[in-house]
Image (tube, rainbow, N blue to C red; front, side):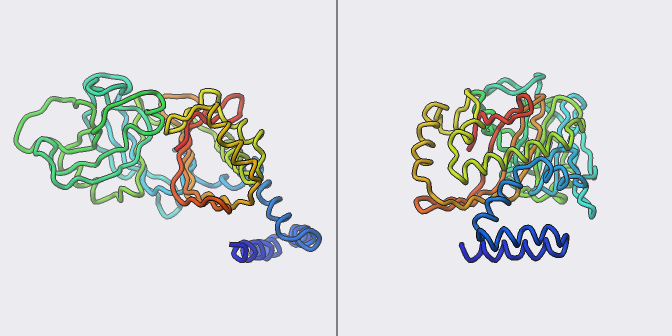
Length: 327
């Protein structure tokens, strides 16, 4: 890992030389005087600056948020009973490619509990394709990740929220018990146009609006890396300041127990490697200040290693992020 980091930093130095010789000279002087670790720490700090992210996302399509790992966005507008597929084009912009009429839950509003006949409002993955289903569900179904970590934090329950087809041999009502239903030719079309591992579903009570500024997204991304910086360099006070007093981890650990647990770990003062890839920052529908942040994480220290997916639900308060749950 040390050799890989050294090679990476040397490659960055070479890139700085190509881009700007004065920047390269400054970085090279830092390397000459203090070595790679000092330069690496400075770069980690720079990743936590608003200026970096303002520049980085300037020409990125952020109509649905900041998205690295999905090629398709499905939006369900419950008020207009539509399901729309947006796909990244050659310019990496999300363009509307397909629109389908849809049935949703009989009762308006966000799903809260099993049997309430509501379609949930939120951000979900498609976790499985069911090719063989009861004829009532048409030709196939896509299983969503409801309830997600935010739903569980809010105490919601229920399951079996699908996108599925219409009955093959019987009549049906013009609503569902909570699923999203489209006609069978439409679900065949959808199946041809998506890979479920590269598709995210956003369900709203109304039509999606591009109302999140790039400045706000850059702020969230900068603070995500400020959180990482505090974690990486064992600054427990700064680290815990990113958590809300209402924090509840996926396993039920509250903020008091979480703080004690993390304090014990930080006291080891271990050298760590923490890398984030496939980052997504998605404004949460039905809210003004909530965000779902997902990424792939690589964590290595002398006592623990982890590689896998991470989910944070956070809110913005006075432009500061506060994590309310994580998994």
